[in-house]
Image (cartoon, rainbow, N blue to C red):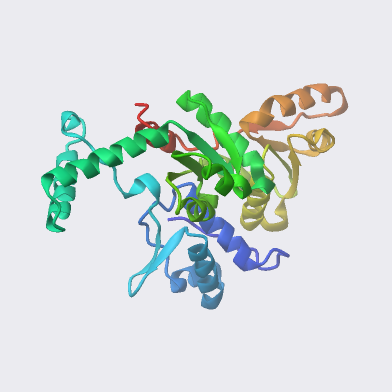
Amino acid sequence: MVQFHIQTDSEIPASTQLFNQIRFAIASRQFPPGHRLPSTRQLAMQTGLHRNTISKVYRQLENTGLVEAQAGSGIYVRAQGHEGGSKLKSPILNEYPLANRIVQESMDQLLGQGCTLNQARELFLAEIDWRLRCSARVVVTAPAEDIGVGELMAKELEQALRIPIQLVAMEELATFLDQISSGTVITSRYFIGQAEFIAAPRSVRVIPVDIYDYGQEIQLVTGLPKDSYLGLVSLSPGMLRSTEVIIHSIRGEDLLVMTALLSDAYKINSIVRSARTIFCDQPSFATVKAAINAAREDIIRPPQLICSENYIGSKSINLLKRELGLG
């Protein structure tokens, strides 16, 4: 069970702390699609927050498109994109034994609505053709203020999928999509609501990716001695902001957290000379390591440098390969 930590004496509003932690749990798939979120009563008991505050956070999550309320049942994580199910053909039934049932149920539903077999065949072929055309152009999107996380996703996807990936700022996505006939838009669950809203009236599909859950890193943060200096270096300002809030929620004022963008050499050098531990992403690793080596004569004990796993979770990579027809 995911545990939420709220620092009640913090300058960061309790609702912001809870919102960021739940959004992280969804984005890292600790709360997978279809997962029922704890009731407001359960969260109130766990966090000490008022149920009205928790209800406000749930409404905010619903407005971003991450969850949906089901009357009389609760709040559930939304399934998006490929999570609604995929269409499989009979030659691979041995590998996917449930495929036959999925196809049969889909056919039964179409026939039940009055479709003929020929019409159903045309619908299936049109869907397959559309998906193939979408797979020919793959776009990663993120808000302009956090285009760094888009660069991170694009680099990882190009390396893993071995296909060209275009990076388009969210603010320019509508104009870009109007110029293409079909395509696939990939983004983090953090931004899925906005991306789906833009893509809805256009001939594209949107696929959310799950991020790495950073379980090992969170465990290390939990075990750091009080008053330790912790450095965070990333290509993405959004990642730095979210990570800082989550670490604050776990440890409060126990740790002094310093952050730096990959492009800010001055701050990186300051972190290297002060921090006990430094977390960085893959693109930042070489720069931070070089800064540590350059400062070795000036520091008594070099900081422990921990390079996190890829931003995108491995399961999402494998699902994307299937969805894009790459394996």
